[in-house]
Amino acid sequence: MSPWVFHAMVALEEKQVPYKLEIVPLPIPSSTKATFEARSLIAKVPILVHGETWISESLAISEYLAEAFPAPAHPRLFPANLAERARARQIMMVLRTSLFALRDARPTSAVFGRPMTKPMPDKAKDEAAELERIALAVIPEGRTTMFADWCIADCDLSLALMRLVANQDPLDRRLVDYALAQFDRKSVRRFVAHLPTSR
Ligand SMILES: N[C@@H](CCC(=O)N[C@@H](CS)C(=O)NCC(=O)O)C(=O)O
Image (cartoon, rainbow, N blue to C red; front, top):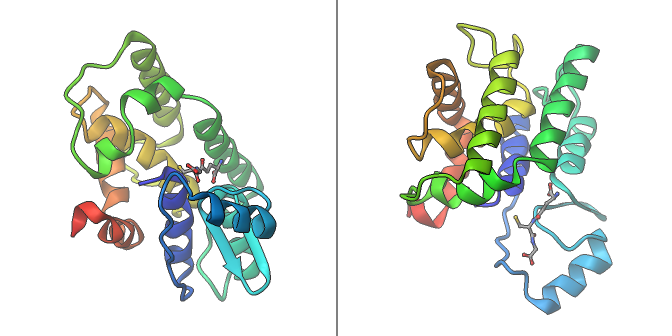
């Protein structure tokens, strides 16, 4: 249920490259951790293994996939337009480096599994309001993607918003529609199908 594994798997699915999924228990057992540290430097999932290359950190993985399997032969992960690409990276970075109270109050287990019944603490509510402000600014009225074409930042932004949607927290209808449309993409549905909660 890791949001970072979600990012990497959606990237692989959108690139339409064949891959084999190996599931690692969390916390990572110490013997496995030692192997990961030796091979991919940082012992956190997701880890992409491509030939002799082992890469952890979800954004490093999607950037790698974008360059290893470039457009037009493969679907794009990042916008072709420079300014849009920078905006996409900005959104993905902010989702990785902030909103900790919201993430704590509305974990991804409450998106992919059982919803939370507890109300959000004030700090999480403030962060939810900030997330809503940012999302409303980057998702135009009547569209279910940030830009004209889907990009990998839509995957991360929709998961952040689903923390609210899945728990019936208040959210602008436009953003609910956006998050639900993103979660109806084949790549996301294939991720959800792998979860133990789906079996
Ligand atoms: N910034 C990293 C975060 C990855 C991360 O924190 N992964 C967690 C699972 S969500 C992990 O592997 N933790 C190691 C452990 O629990 O032993 C990314 O974007 O990939």
